[in-house]
Length: 216
Image (cartoon, rainbow, N blue to C red; front, side, top):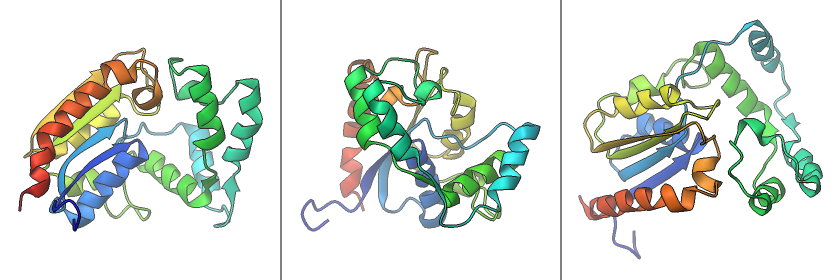
């Protein structure tokens, strides 16, 4: 603020970055935000089948310090040009970008995250760790300009899993973009077509909201 003079920020978040946006809004409101872009951020989850329920139960007894060594796994696979990203992309990420993600864009998945995601799968909604606060219900009626994006080819966050949060923010300037089945979960941020077909639209919309950063 001291350098730019702005009192509000523009938030851009993908997946958990969008989920963190909703958690922030639920706790802090919209007073420090001028607008937001939420990409492929699910807030509603299909009820798990029996084996998924077993995973959910098992996650509750995981040691707090435990983590899936996801970064190590991806670094081992990177020289082979292979990844476990089949559910994350529809294949529009070029080889060098994919290998770069595997080497530098992956972190271990800690037990707390596993337990939280298991909670969402069990309840069917984006909630806090104790299932006392449904974040979509908490943000209902807030006024914030928001641009929501989801992809039909995304098994992690299909459009119907993301749209309820955009709909809940019922008083602002809203835009919703539903990408086709050729778009997966990571494609909107690192796919080869994203920079040409999606980014210009997002940048134009963000530029329209910039003046709100200096609004009191």
